[in-house]
Amino acid sequence: MLEYANLKALAVVVSEGGFDRAAKVLHITQSAVSQRIRQLEEKVGQSLLIRSNPVVATPTGKRLLRHYSQVQLLESELRAEMDADDPNHPTTVRIAVNADSLATWFLPALAGMFIRHAWLLELIVDDESYTHHLLKNGEAVGCVTTTEVPMAGCSSEFLGTMEYLCVATPEFAARYFSEPSDTPSLSDNPSLSDTSSFNAINQAQLAKAPAVVFSTKDKLHEKFLAQYFNMTPGQWWQHTIPSSESFLEAINLSLGYGLVGHLQAKPLIDRGILIELTPERRMRVPLFWQHWNIKAKQTTLVYRALAATAQHNLLQA
Image (cartoon, rainbow, N blue to C red; front, side, top):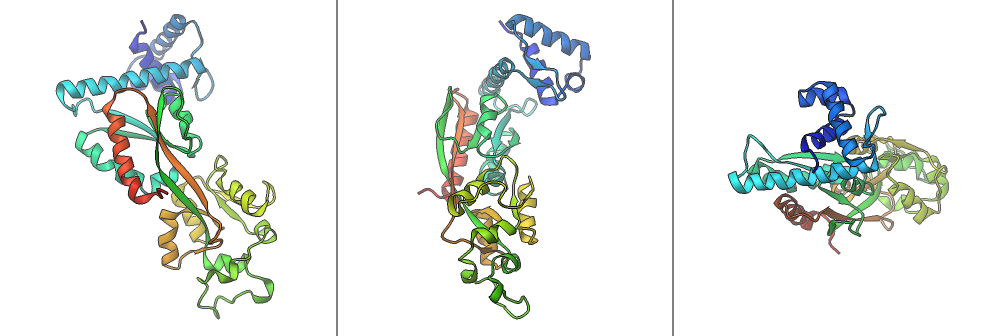
């Protein structure tokens, strides 16, 4: 039988990145934390931590963390059934989500429910193609992901599709994507929102125009250029801005062009702030909700809330 005080110590060491900070969170000495981890490692007969900076869990350590997180969730539900949701012991629900969803439809979907139940929301933000790894490692109880096939012990539900439009400001488009012979003058051309001048964007222009990319993990831009323009990494320049708000601001400031989700792009296009550079060339990214197969009301209610909001915000076809 595992000692859950020791499992908690393991979880806090990993979340805090070290023994000293974990000791402060647990209100015990650092040596006591080390002793709990040592007892747990002796119990399972394997090393559970890589003593790096920050400290990270080994594969066995990750499996124990996943087990501990599941037990925490079930215990929270049991308390709720016995005492109703206890504000002195609020349930924490950890969810992994991609930045574009977080910046648009995700929080409005969950806010009301978390307020009603007095739950705490802990979000881990990562690229949508990586969030399922956080679920697998036990760092989250559910995730918004592009991975359709459910992982072992998990369920997968379709939420909807985010459509990405290739956009830029009219000024940026005029600078990089107009033919030299008819480059529009910003002072003489009041109709820069007209995309007809930019429909023949080609590989040579894209090689010179700086792109704005969310992060090194984000391969959407790479797939877009490969699919539609037969370009490979190294054939274009890019700014890397790992913040959904700053990513969009960089495009709005004419720092570069980029792929923006339809929920953010279309209002800006309607206002003439951005134009769509390739109206016939868009990228579709299906999103799924994956969660553990345990009988916890939190994951069930979270999915229902996400599905209801996604129905009205994401493409369903």
